[in-house]
Image (cartoon, rainbow over all chains, first blue to last red; front, side, top):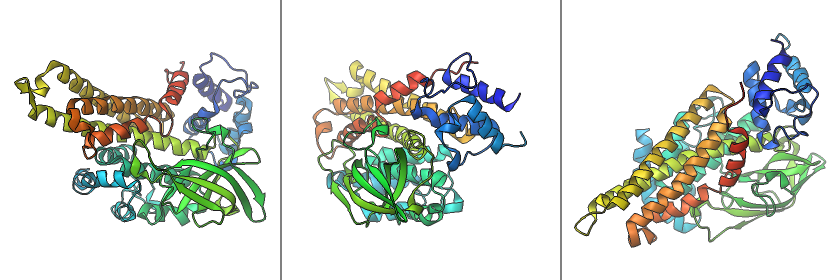
Length: 79
Length: 365
């Protein structure tokens, strides 16, 4: 599975949707409450065995599957 | 954990009513809890803590919840701030965590405001960039241990983003007003804060990016809910132990109260609820120790169930004690008042319901 596929699997499970295009803004669509954004961060940290630092805890990095893929690809270049 | 239980029974429970009546918290007890390693339990050894695992930490907070809600509240608040600092505190970690762990520093959690309770994203306190740091203005309410805190974890809007700062209590422009007349947890030394042009150096701004709910706050609240859930378990155990003792000794209509079916029903319901709450807390502990993303939901469910159950169990305890349970100095009277607050602090029952309904069901395959 690619990084994008693994993120996609985690995000659709968290958002409880069967499918999610990579460019959909999950916060704007109301698929994930900001009260719950920490869980998304933790899920990605767990999935990829990384810790996402404070500098990367920015909404723009988590809005879409595409943005998350770029973030994770940067943090786990060998994956 | 036996040493904790012995200490709570010998040194905490007998003082609980006096702490409650005082409306504040004895500083010397903070130092003792620090010296015994219990304030530093959630802090990793790298920063002078004990690095306890989640289950041991939960049991610790449960034991204190059994003896004194205000003391458990101190452990909760210190843990919330210590864990948030360890995750997001950068260079402040070396400076603050060892002293928090030793009980040399007391920290206050300053998030709620007159118009921002459960809706924490509505905070209006403002942090304006200034040379070398930020200037904070605003009002904070219900700050646990705010009367005696040496430092505060303060949340304010900085360029519209909810941001966390560590504020020293001696900062010019900071004024604290004790909150009196609380229903419960009266020993939590609550205060309201007025921030009037308080300067905070840029080194005292915590990380956490630009999420609408600061990850610093989310981390702290998650720890707080976990602690409060375990505290509720301890509170229930205390109420049930007192109730069974009383109902076994007191005879009415020719038999012990405990043999009256309506009393037995209350007691048995309480025992079942208490054990169920403990199991949910243990489930949350397992997920936390595994670093599983399920930990957040498991903690919400544990907090929701345990605190509601604690209210019911404490109410039954007072009911079964009768007039004796309605008098100040009766432990169940204090637990009854404290239990109600557990349903409100670190996220109300209703907020838990909204989050659990939305995210608590099993994930889609």
